[in-house]
Image (cartoon, rainbow, N blue to C red; front, side):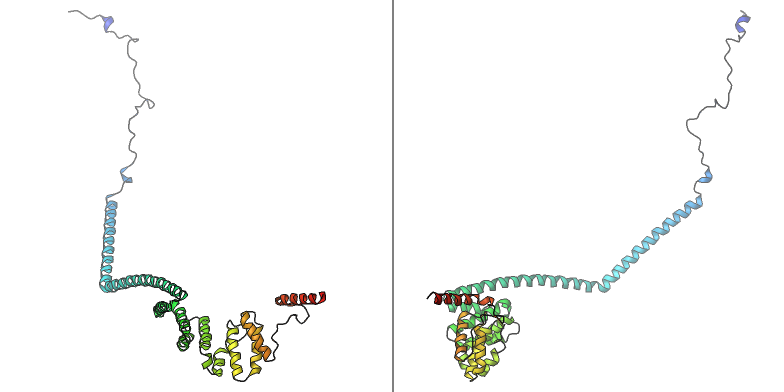
Length: 304
């Protein structure tokens, strides 16, 4: 048996491993940090139970509210649903009726306007019978805006056919129509008196036309002439003369009417010649032509 050498078994200090010492600085570093939260920081069992109970109560309250609203809606429908449905139907029906009526009225206006134009064309062509048939269709209540013009045209056709009585009757109807425009009513009054002037009493002529025989009125010239003639029939030249003189000076009247009035006024001894100069002796603007004529006449005499 071989004995080991003491040299081999002896541990040399240079070959021995260095002893390892553990200090605070050389403590091993862990991969995960330690949990610093203690169990006391988390919710307890009582808190979780309270939260669950509160959530259940909230769901229950919402279900109760939904059920209450549903009951209220059902009660409203049962109590007032029929009335509400009827109201909706009535409103829709009324709106639909208004749309139909508006369209119908527009169509009628277009048809009436076309018929009136055709009647005028027939009058111009001398086809009075055709014009009368078209105009009579426009005298109904549905014609509205074309009713009064159509009636006036029918009266004019009757007068053209020597039916003065029939024409005067239509004119009187228009004059008495309160829904007709006032200018057309005045026109009907003047034409009614003119159609039967010879058959009317002069007092009636004055009574009907005197409101229109005033200076400034659109019918002053025409109405004033008939009123003046009625005054002459009543043997009132003192009222007829000034009226004829005023008509002769009215620039809104036609020249033919002014000429007749000037002659009648002269026969009655009333000056119907318009003033050439004003109070200061200056020529009036609308008589400048007369002044020029007078100057030309004077120049002609001087040349002679």
